[in-house]
Length: 538
Image 1 (cartoon, rainbow, N blue to C red):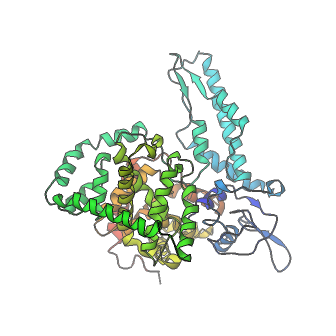
Image 2 (cartoon, rainbow, N blue to C red; image 1 turned 30 degrees about the vertical axis):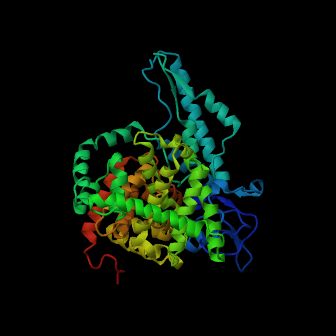
Image 3 (cartoon, helix red, strand yellow; image 1 turned 45 degrees about the horizontal axis):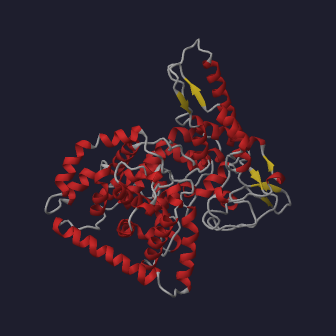
């Protein structure tokens, strides 16, 4: 289940729909209502009440939230929803102000707009810069109001013109600095989506710091018989970009430990994958269930990472469709579950980076520039590594996704023991762990983190000796505890959900993931062997 649309619509979900809708399940869409918006329900006495708003003296319940949010997979992400009837919708002033302030706070917590360099106080350009900053704040406030009423900040021609006027500031030495106001606006239009951001200098320097690891990795990888335990220990703290593709193949169990057998196995497995494509994907006839599977994949893939040009290329989408369809056919117990498409992305990026070169900018990469052989290698290796990677979490994707439900309950019990104050705060305001952590478990945090951070996190996941299924529980616990102070400052259900479903991680680097997995390891070491830590209190 994806909550991408829930996060986008909740940010602006202060409006009351004009027509009452009947209650539906949490992950099914009711097309008659505005997705993710609070609905008006008439009680037996004939009085109406608004679901999603918190009354004084009582907090919203999970059932209220479930009734008010009837989107998710069927309709897709809210950035593709055409919301009609906005003019007929009444907006709660208090709720809209809360949403606007939260959006403004999120904007201000980012890297910010461009800064003037070496400017003199007596320079008249300083006053222009002050006006530019004031205009930037005004635009942010205006965007916050737009988000409160429409769900996503609109990019109108007027706003773009104003931004362009204040987009450039000139320093004393003549340097023109262009701020990233429009880029930040574009980013915030897609809350909760995995970000393929251009690697900044900080990220590049992090990779330079890994130079000392190259020799260690080379010695392990070039040994006639691989020491898999040593490779896992070295990879746990991160894999250098140049070594990542071959290391992931080995950690996934896709390649054998014997050096002389690796090339032979690679060639055979790639041929096997092409045969699977011919047998299943290119088949002349499919049964009804296979047709339904393909239709769902065909709908999901184009709306995956809509703001990243790379994933909108036809060749890339066709590649994802083949990988997902064949995986679903070969795993009939679960079949295709929406959210698995996000799990293909890290493997695809790592093997694409290997094909084009470690220093190539993937945002500008055209898959048509690669040879057919290179594209086949990327596709087949992504398929086999995905299959190996998902083997230990198969129960996450069977009917009713029982594995995820169990992990959500475990996370709840774990947080209750680690931080009772935070647990009581969430419970008091009617926030159920299922509302935010289902996506964490289903998508393995790919929608909460920038893509390069997800790849760094998966270095550790793949290096976990007992599989990452258990460790991921503690990563989610550490991730939730990281935002403890901000969560405790929120005093209502709406504020908590806005934060939990739009966590400001867009500026995270590898160092943040290093701290996250270290804290997760500490929690696992402390609680994993405590026999009572996942049992309910008597």
